Length: 147
Image (cartoon, rainbow, N blue to C red; front, side, top):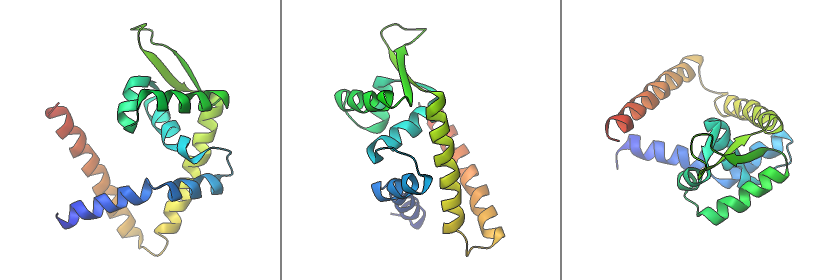
């Protein structure tokens, strides 16, 4: 494994660990089950996403996703409705309350990243940001080309 691959893998694993999510939720002061955090984030990023697609992205089975979505829906953070283009597809979307929770979590994540990089130079932060944008653009192009 290359140094780049190892570093990216470790960074992604650390940021997706339940403990990292728990820290963000606690610091944000939101009442959200840690297990629901990644789903709410995915739905928020997609704006509308099919339940089957969400299950595939989260690498969870349909029944687990349905139970977790029911919890988010009970809390008023998402809604589920039939797709306007395909009535067979059930889609999830974030409500106004869900967007508020996501905004607070986003602000908290930003403060956390600022703490994590507090001893970095402005140049290092700018360089990392520029390179991550370049990397995500290249990954997007790669996946679209090889779809």
